Amino acid sequence: MTSSITFEKAIKRLEEIVKELESGDIEIEKALTIFEEGTKLSKICAKKLLNIEKRIEILKKGEKGEDILELFQGIDEE
Amino acid sequence: MKIESISEKRNVYSIAELTKKIKFILEENFSNIWVQGEISNCRKATSGHIYFTLKDEAAVIKAVLFRGYQRAVRFELADGLNVIVHGSVDVFDKRGEYQIIVDLIEPVGLGALQLAFEQLKEKLQKEGLFDESHKKQIPAFPDTIGVITSPTGAALRDILNVVERRYKGIRVIIYPVLVQGEGAAEEIADAIKKANLRGDADVLIVGRGGGSIEDLWPFNEEIVARAIYHSEKPIISAVGHEIDYTISDFVADLRAPTPSAAAELVVKNKQELLKRSKELSMRLYSSLERMISQKKEKASYYSAELLLRRINALINEKNLILDDVSRSLSNQIEACLTKNRGRFEKAVGQLNALSPLNTLARGFAIISKLPENKPVFSISDVNKGDEIKTRLKDGVLSSRIHQIIENT
Image (cartoon, rainbow over all chains, first blue to last red; front, top):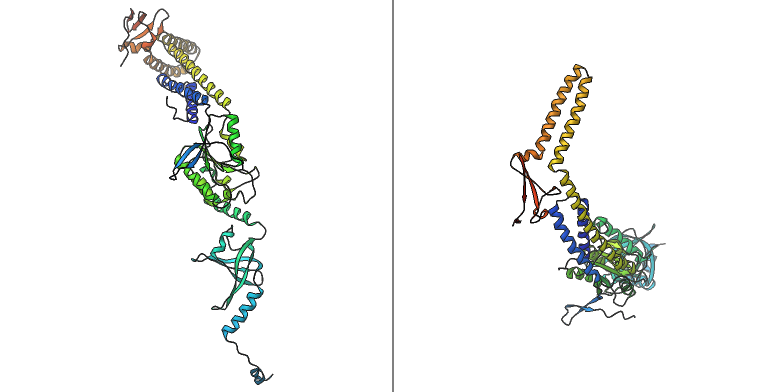
């Protein structure tokens, strides 16, 4: 499953699909197609929400001045 | 007094000597002075020095602010500003002129920073940097949040606390920058550009914790304002406390009163999100079910028998009314009615044309599944072995399905 789509986009599209289906004003073939899309999106949303891995990163400069993302180790209070 | 006696006491200065004396007197007595007046004829020379005159109701004096001293003056010099300047009087021998060499300027009334703030605010507003139409929508459920702030500051701590409390699954990328002092504005502006280039965050929070107006100053700098304006990623500005307003707040797509509040706007409660996506999934399933049952109902409504029955009922009803009316009305009205009857009959004809029975006459068939006589629209409506009824223009065939072949 591609989860390159953001949660925001997934849930927005899911809302659109539900609205369209609820309006009833739609061909049955199209309804089935977007229904299928909707089930995929709802799975993506659930998967994203269940991911509880903490990901706080900080952008640092590498030796050659290149950007590197490092896991953030917490704040050293000054 | 006779002219001779004056000439006898003559002491003739050369211009240089006189000027030297004047220069000595003026520069000795008027160094390190404060003068208040209104700026006029203000102009910046190509050398970078700023020349202006200070005036009040009675007099004017020339003044110059050399380029090297301009960094200390935060606001823009402009005609009409009432200021207090510090400096020394200088005599320019070659021109026989004197002027004040200014090394410090303060506006009268407002503080210098306040004035600079107002000036920049007005300038950027005129340019349209605060226009509502340019503001971008803040994503309600971003996957990744970029935070442009000090990696050791209170703002970051507050933001991470909100993340910890609400939803640990969200990704946070910290773009560490200085948030006060020399070079801070440039770093903030660069980080905004970098975040846009990298494109890894869906929304950016730019800010810092509370502090004095000097501490917050980078967020009032033009370079930061322009970087925010040109950002393609939506930006929430979160500078200081609720009462602190900065230029960044006006340019940003959204102003949050504090860094915590900024985080709360984009880090949604995980439970809420779960509830919301569950609810949507449920609606998804029920809407499809409801739609299918509606379509079925509609299909049976238009089945051949029903339609025919409805048409006949309609015709009978109209005929009854017509008979009734025509019997009771005068000839004249009857003539009018005849005309209407023509229209009515035409309508009935049109209705007949729509009848599925006419379609049958053209060689099409209506198929229904027995025993419930349910109309068949698709191969998925029947199974192998089902008994079906095929209605043609002149009769009915009854048959059993022995093979189902799907269109490829």
